[in-house]
Length: 230
Image (tube, rainbow, N blue to C red; front, top):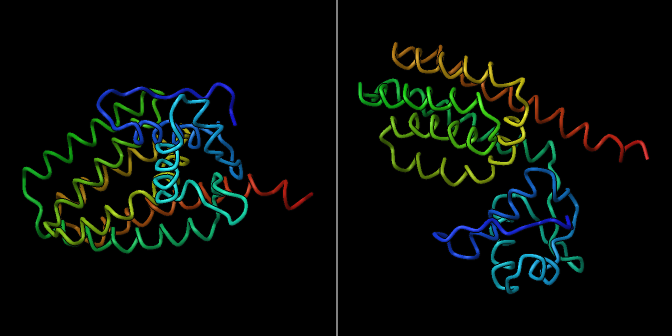
């Protein structure tokens, strides 16, 4: 456990959410390593809270795929695997295809205006170093596309998948070398939607996701390679 782990204070959130955000950040930033045990008592003492919010936060981490509970060992930081990456993003790919096809039919001028603003906010965020902000702006861009479908069930299903995708999105966005590609793809997606060119937008969305899969897959292989050689 990282010795300088400090609670991210936020007076507007329940304590369990504050603990969750603190542990989530530590995992995403690599301060808590894959396979590292999440010991309730130790973390409670370190963060100055009781074990209850720690336990609740761990359950929330498990829901996002960031933690896993192993019999007789307890909770630990989950490893990223190629299989999980491919399973999650394969579903996302299919939902994106449906989303942009439907959005091309139903989007309004107001939708396009909102999407353009979201694209600008994402591009602005990419000029800074706040990875969480960049991820947030990226999610907001895609959320507008999903809302363009005017299909509440589709929006709900994609929302349920969001938590499982977050870690992979974060890992991809951590690499600044990807920013120019992401910004360019967002612009093409907006242009294709405005032209209501279904085939074009679907192809860009497929490539958009494929870039993420390939980059994170390479990262996973780099992280697991030493284990294979030992």
